[in-house]
Image (cartoon, rainbow, N blue to C red; front, side, top):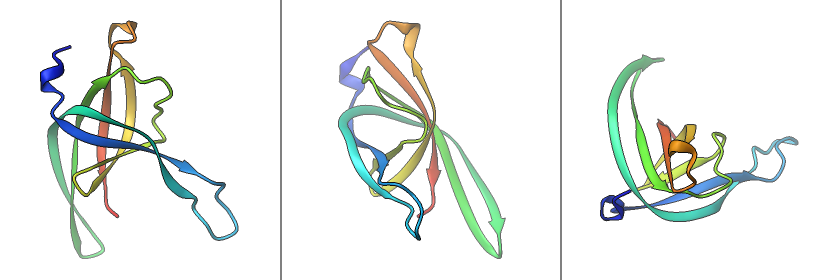
Length: 104
């Protein structure tokens, strides 16, 4: 991995608390790290007379145990859900996270 390409600072968040009783739980910081962020597509859809765009892409980071698809990424005042987590070559050195933008 070329660490010079990890030029964006991201926050990986996990949902804490238990949903129910009218709450959805709160997001808390799991870790902060430098990453390479790459967007691959942007889809637009009309939902109830509102046009929404949805960016998808990948994020490369150093290996960090415990990251799961139910977590989210906070990056540049935007939020992305983690769709998949891949340990590159299963060597515990680098991870690729497939992401999709979430509308707040």
